[in-house]
Amino acid sequence: HIFYAVHDRLSQFVNFNHSIEIKYITMTTAEVPLKFHFVTYNVGTSSPEEDLHKLLQLTPELQNDQNFDFYVIGLQEVKSQIQNIVMDALFEDPWTNSIKNILKIRDFVKIKTIRLQGLVLNIFCLRKHLLSLKFIETQYTRTGLGGMWGNKGAVSIRFALHGSSICFVNAHLTAHDHMQSDRIEDYHSIIKESKFSPKLVTDILDHDYVFWFGDLNFRLMDEDSTSPEYIAQEISRNHLNQLYEKDQLNNARVNGEAFQDFTEQTPKFKPTFKYIVGTGDYDMKRRPAWTDRIMYKLKNNSSINRKIKFEQLSYRSHEGYTMSDHKPVSSHFIVPVSEQIEDSVVHFAPIEQWKLDKENKVEFTVMSDVEISSDDWIGIFKDDFSSLDEYKEYMYARNGNIVSRVNGHQSASAEEFEHKCYNILFPDTSLHSLGMYRLIYFGVEDDSTSILGLSEAFPARKED
Image 1 (cartoon, helix red, strand yellow):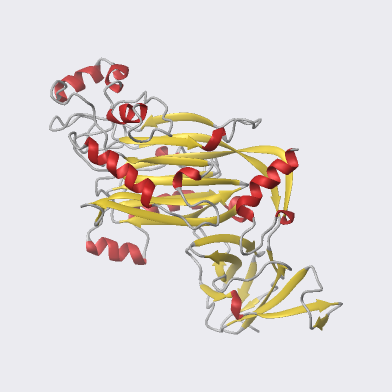
Image 2 (tube, one colour; image 1 turned 180 degrees about the vertical axis):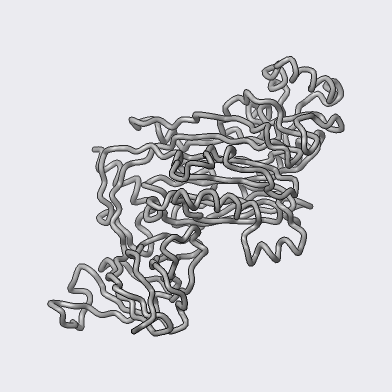
């Protein structure tokens, strides 16, 4: 019964046009707890001048501390003037680069970045999880100026991981105390307009796990009777529960106006906005509020029958950071997934040596009933790559020639065998530098990408 239940669950999104069927995944009934660390931070156009290790729950002196499997980083108000957008299109923005540099020495790889003006969403994972990532896809929704401008809105990334679909939404909603109805409208616009390709599920709320975070900009109710000074005084008396009763977001959620499907752990930290930059003091020009939030949604109690339970282990602000008028917020989740031993769909033949400035032939095998998409591609990466964007060269897999071998001899028919064998010729311009490299096979269909194969490391040298 357990096997068929898991089979039916996986087949919803494992059986797509690449025909990656259940037989390529060895299932066990065991479960593993994956640890996710979330950060949301409205950086207020500042630069990352303060040490970010504490925000990531890392110690600078320890380069092997791997407390988490995934880092999910949502930023708002990253500098988005035209010169910044142009530069960040060519190079990573300073915040993303700073975080990547901290994580890469701990064997994390940046899976994906999506940016909408000042909104940036980054996801990093331990290298060992790469082959488990399927259907990676991004979306964005503008809500500023009636949907015409991206100064407000949401960016999202979704993927399938060990048989579970997960969606991450980083949002920056309409500001100001009296604009509650606009924030609610923003929420519904994002839900309505964010549509993914149907290879997994199309709607945000249909994923097994949904995490929604960001500068949601909800304030405290009773604007006329709760002045900035009154709120600051209540905070100093630690009357946070009384203030939370006036929280616009929580009331909208309870009343079914917005976020009614989401759960939020009650904040035990002080309101995160608005501070005087460079200090821990509130700016009395605005009413302090919990603008920065992290929430989650589970589909149909998706973890209820699991031995390992979905848990939120922390939810806190980081008052020591003073670069912005907001304080960053972080949260740590345990996400249970079924343990799987996933065979690569694509296997690369060992490469003894890549000849620099020469043409090089790459051989790879594909499961017999897997069809190569016209957009599938193979990238060459440094062995210590820290981002899936860091390919040195790529070739479309469709440019390969199919060959099948029996006892070392070519055969005319590939359909007789368990695997199709291909070779593809990389041009002499592919690599020019000595070092160790790897190949990654990316399966692409519509707007989603799956990591289907990863080669062993190989040296690139000048030919003697």
